[in-house]
Image 1 (cartoon, rainbow, N blue to C red):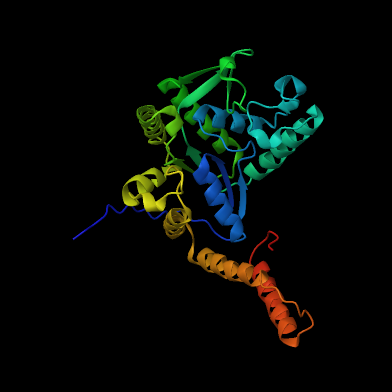
Image 2 (image 1 turned 30 degrees about the vertical axis):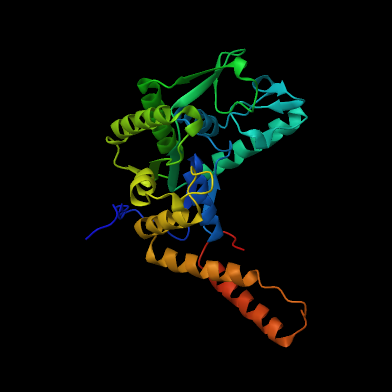
Length: 316
């Protein structure tokens, strides 16, 4: 007798190995995956524009990165004493235009270099809603709490979503490593502020367009993260207190499914050992001269050196 609808990730023939480069962009799942990868000392680069939710803004960011196109002061607006990019989240805001631009353009440069060697790209779509900034007649990624009267909210059309996803795939195939694998998912986080029915329609538009586009590409796959959260973990005990975002238990469950589907056995072992080392590094003592502590530190250094010899990038 079954008591739940279990959703599995299909086992991939293209695996993440010790030296794979993994780029992620989009909504929360991309950030969660990137954080896990970095925790285990794998090479990951996440959201150089900050968290992005809609496919149009994600595609625009990737086009800027692909072209290594820097922002200028004309691309910024000033609000509440800060220079802001409506294509980015608020982490880039500052009181001086050159500081905002330096931060934004530095990330474009870094992500352009990283993407050139990316073996996997993980993209999470969150919503098909978008806002137009009326003073500039520009579609934006973030409203930065600017008064609503300056924006017009609407759904992206089916064509706009399809075109954005298609161009995203083309851009990545052009700039990434030859055998890049592109993994799309749809965020299970419900945008309840849009309205429950409106959120369902928003997600449905993403599902329809995404599956219509990716069905023609062998190197593009879908990760059923939404289904794992909504169907497999269909219980509020797997959510944070806001009843919207997955909690740590849910994230860990989905992560373990991802590891089983996409990691080589060698990578699983390397990753697991690094987690043990990370935990050991957190150990502190008041008696740093204690012979047992010094022996513990020496053994830890040897373990790190052994792990370092397995990869090309710097760890710990």
